[in-house]
Image (cartoon, rainbow, N blue to C red):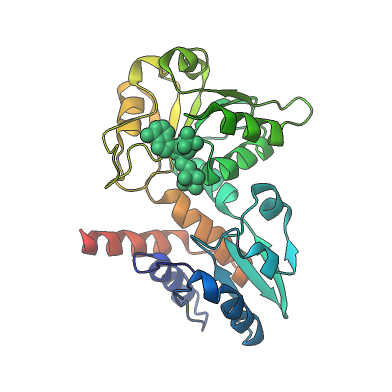
Length: 277
Ligand code: ATR
């Protein structure tokens, strides 16, 4: 469920996964206008659909329409999957766990004990900060153009020894944090295709450690200026569609109770993207 939904590649890779496992279910894309959301969630419940992937602009609006929230959905404040457990709707969020799995599988990076910088303080940053906290990151800096938003996010997730630091995006402020980080994550829209700042990056190579892994939540284009800067510094990179696909894979596994055929699902989406270009 999303709106608009025309661009979504979810049906392609979800259906490929279902078919590969011989599961006789169909993944449908529902274009749901905001005013129809309540009615469509009711249809989903009453007709016994198994699970729903929820995307923009419904990830918050759907919260009061489900019966239960998992800890992840509660902490992130957004639902990207609903599971229909015999008429009880459970709202969950796999953006954070999908990010961790993408980082592990595609960059071989385990954030436990790492020093990390997250650029941005919007919805994607929230899911990633939640995930990094759970993964046992050591020090975390949240850098955002609007520092106040970074401060709010940092204090919301502060707990015990885990105290994220907030800062702005000026070079001077970043110089106090970025060179010491082994993980850099861009969640801002800087570098996004079609946006006003396609060639922009939150940080440039001279501040980046050669030991760093850079992850970009921006997936179009697959190689952003930020990832080029990380490469130039000698670091490793990951991003592209990996977070998008792994959030779907995590939901697929919870919906079906089976291990997802990850390679088949990635091959399906890569073929669809190639056919588009
Ligand atoms: P998402 O849900 O994808 O995280 P969002 O909530 O709209 O999207 O957040 C966009 C992020 O990109 C914000 O951190 C935003 O910074 P502000 O909080 O200061 O608005 C950041 N962003 C967008 N355009 C930017 C720009 N030109 N320079 C720096 N940061 C930018």
